[in-house]
Each structure stands twice: as structure tokens, then as C-alpha cells.
Image (cartoon, rainbow, N blue to C red):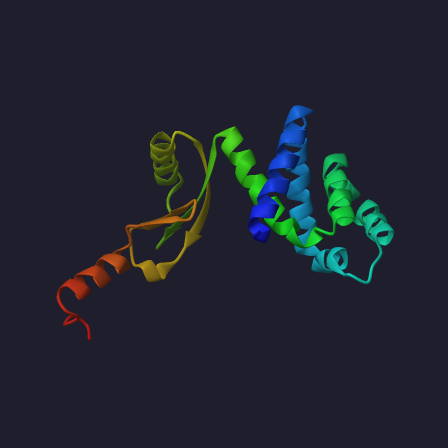
Length: 181
């Protein structure tokens, strides 16, 4: 069985558990803190996965360095240590985050433009996207002058590319590559 499927099952079980205890937001906040902490100090993740470190030492490390992530996340980490599944923690975090956003009606998108959008234009675009997706949109904006103009939207593994660069490449292909070669 793929580790991604196993991670999804663990994430779903954790999600169901915390939701049943009405601690979903608290657990989500803890998972966000955990992600930040592991990104800031990658050695913690390596130590959690190290086969030469005992379960008790790993649990002590969780208490000492990851206690601020909250009781629910600590319990999850203890369970993963006991089951020898700490290597799928990042996948569990990803699946849990996806499930949480679905539950909350949140769509995360990445919006790439050639220049920074004015605040009013960005607000209008986000409102339009919220109507289309029927979800609250949280956008990460990226400025990439190489796209020349237009915009690229990434959402749930899909790419909606309305960039001038892509349009020029399509025209070039249709004309047999005779332009700019």
C-alpha cells in the first residue's frame, strides 16, 4: 500500500477524532505550528525518523520541542512514534490540511502575475474566484516578470494559464515555429 494512502488514512482518522471532540480548529492550529517548527528546525524531523533513537527519547523530544503544538498534535506524534510511522508525518500534515480546508470551505490558490496587482484589482479577482469556486479563497501571490502579462492560477493541482508567454508559445506552435526562431 502506498505511503500516501496510509498517510491519508491516518490524517482522516485524526481529523475525525479532533472533529468529534470539537477541537478541529485547535488541532489545525497545532498542525500549522508543527509545520513551522519542523521547517525552522529540520533536525527535529530527522530525529523523529531516526531508527537509532528510542521511542521514549522521541516522546521526550516531542514534549520538549513540540509541546507548543498542542495536546492533540502531541497525541498524534506519540501514536506515530509508537506505530513507527513518523516518516509519513509530512504527508499526514498535507492530507489533514486539505481535509480541514474542505471542511471550512477554503480554496488555496497561487496567483502568478507579471507585475504586482493593485489592491483593488486583486480584491476584485479574488471575489470573482470565490464566486466561481463557491469557497473562500486564500491566495498566495507571486510576481514573475517572465510571464510577460496576464496571470496563472494554480488550484488543487490544476493550472489555469492565461499568461502572454503561453499565448505566444501557442501561436508559435500553430504557425509551425516560424516566429522568433
